[in-house]
Image 1 (cartoon, rainbow, N blue to C red):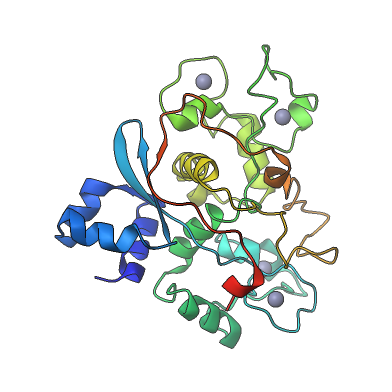
Image 2 (cartoon, rainbow, N blue to C red):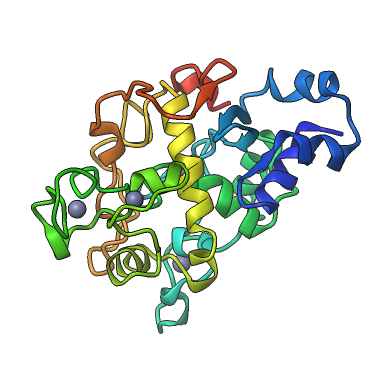
Length: 276
Ligand SMILES: [Zn+2]
Ligand SMILES: [Zn+2]
Ligand SMILES: [Zn+2]
Ligand SMILES: [Zn+2]
């Protein structure tokens, strides 16, 4: 059993799995599994609503640099990663790579032990590791009363109007608890989320909630070398990168009465040395 095999199995289960299920899946003793997941930066182990869970994560990112001369990130179309690129069907085609096995991409994936992941497994892993790929949950919507809470943008908000407490467990408040409600559905579709991926949004956002709380590393949009002033990969007409970097603007959250408990050290700060 290798770290890569565990990552693949977890990604096939929508990005997280109970510790017990992982043990029985690989026929391991606690100590053997601990020796892999506890020292690896590919996993976060946490108690979620009383259950010990293992969540997969990665430092791999999509490159956003126009005409990049070469870097340690994936050169891949985000919409292709999500499963459906509408530009591919146009007369001029898509200007981003749809080749997961290109020289650059194969090298990056192999270096991170991700070369056995299929496209959907990789998509799951990246969506819950790079917080810029999906719209952030609207914090204002989750505060105050009324249909939109304190969100000043109301119906026009590009962030996700979904109940944060629901993402952490059970909740019976009046906020949205369904990703298929009109506003969350449109917000996600505008960012390229396909019908197939809609089915895993609850799992992914629940995983992101845990990972954000457990990582002190700069989130997407932070002091990451790839996100310079020239960072792009956006299509103004589609707006699928709208809201990018929002996660980095939020102050670090402290664990205030949540059901999460950190069981291992968070990521060290991202820096160039970590990118091969
Ligand atoms: Zn690049
Ligand atoms: Zn494309
Ligand atoms: Zn909002
Ligand atoms: Zn709620």
